[in-house]
Structures are given as C-alpha cells and as structure tokens.
Image (tube, rainbow, N blue to C red):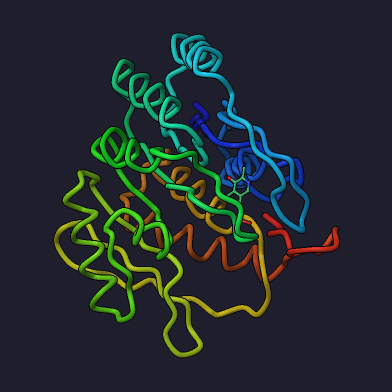
Length: 255
Ligand code: PLP
C-alpha cells in the first residue's frame, strides 16, 4: 500500500517553501502527501511580508479529524509560529503515538522575517524535540537552541551533542561550509557523519523545507535516519541545480 506522510507547516503561496513545497517532495518520493496548515504567510520570491497563525482550535480540529482517520507513516513539522501551535502538535503526536517525526525548527526566513512568535522555540525544545526521530536545524537555528554561536567544525559537533541530549534520535545540522563544499553534520549519539555536497552559487528559497520533507519521506519508506539524510541531501542538491526563477527574487527549487 502507498505510504502516507503528513506535513504540519506554514503556507507559502509561491510554492517554493512551506507545505506547498513539502507536498511536491512527498509526491517525488512516491508517497501520498497530507498537509495541515499551521500558519499563512504573505510572500513572494522577494521575501515574507506578513504571517498569521491558524488558531489553536482550528489547528487542533484539523489534526483530530485527520488523525482519527489516517495514521501517517511519517510526520514533518515546519513553521509552527506560536507556542500554542507547538503545544497542539505535541499533544496530537503523543495522543496518536505517531512515529517518524521530523522537526524542522523554522525560525527566520532567508529574507530576514521572523517566522516564530516569542516563546515558540522554547516550546519546540521542551515539547517536540523529545518526541522527534530526526531534527533538521540549520546552523543559525541550532545556535538559538544551544545559546552558543558556531565558528568551527568542533563548535558544530558540540551543538549536535547538546541538541541530541534534548531528546531526538538523530540531529542533522545543515548549512555548514568547508572550502567549496557544503557540509551537513549528522549525529545520532554514536559517531558524526559529514554529508558533503556541491556549493551552488545564488540565493534559493525553501531548501530547508525541501530537505526536512525529503528526510520524512525517507523515514516513511523505511530508511534509517542516516540513509534518509543522505538521500535527502542528494535530492535537494539536484533540485537546487535545476532551480527556476519565475519571479523577481530568489530561485525556487525544481523538485
Ligand atoms: N515560508 C514558509 C511557510 C516557510 O516554512 C519557510 C521556511 O521554512 C519560509 C517561508 C522561508 O524559506 P526560506 O528561508 O528558505 O526563504
């Protein structure tokens, strides 16, 4: 039977990030994608202008109806925006004992707009990270959780250890660079794995969303976290290389 995967994330009308992107990634991996919006954004390829949450009750009833009917093989969360939304998602994940949870702790858009209200990341740390199979912070998001900035490879390893202690089974810190290569750091409590890729010139929108969605897709298909991470990395790299520029701003991944 076809596997199913759910994204709980913000809406991005450009289709370049958020749940619109996630659904395309799920389709690419041959999965049935499902989507519950947690926030709506007003944005173009030039950046995010405004965001508003989907209220707590509406978010809860979307999840209750869906999850009492379909049990997803994996779940990904993206922009949750408010501490209340984080609370609702954590409650539903626990209530339905959902597995293969991937948390992309979205904090700020690449255009600089905050995608979280005060207290959201604290709520993610307390309530969601302990439930996660994989978390996919970029370097900046990782530093918001640890309170430490990262300059060297050793700093990123320290951050991965701290994040691992917050409860997830595996941590992938994305967005590192070494010479002309991008380096994501994978850590599951045993050894560090460096996932390297080609550095591609230009500004692209939605890379973090596509990566975490691809990791969730891999888990739904039965990959172990490291295997899912490797597959996601090479998938996103290909999509960046084929990027399109339908608007005036950032490139969009062709998934
Ligand atoms: N809009 C939504 C709904 C998102 O979830 C995200 C990122 O996760 C963004 C915008 C920002 O994407 P980027 O920082 O890649 O431009």
